Length: 83
Image 1 (cartoon, one colour):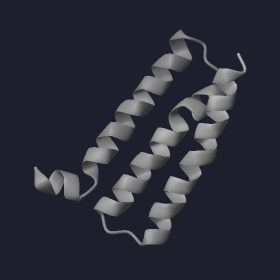
Image 2: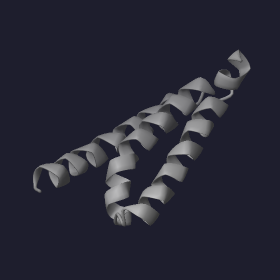
Image 3: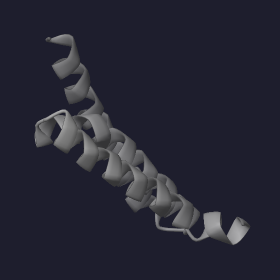
């Protein structure tokens, strides 16, 4: 089981589940793709950072993924609060 996490496959599984959830939301709730990007984007970026850390990637890739999550989160907050 530790190999499953150390290889990053646990994060891959979570990302696949999130992708399935996004498709279901697109089909059932008729969400716009840009809205889904703002909803799922920060979480995906943080998961990619976690995967990079688990597999021993360079710190630059980890920080890039973390940094990308913040503006997406702010845009999502702005979208939600403006309603």
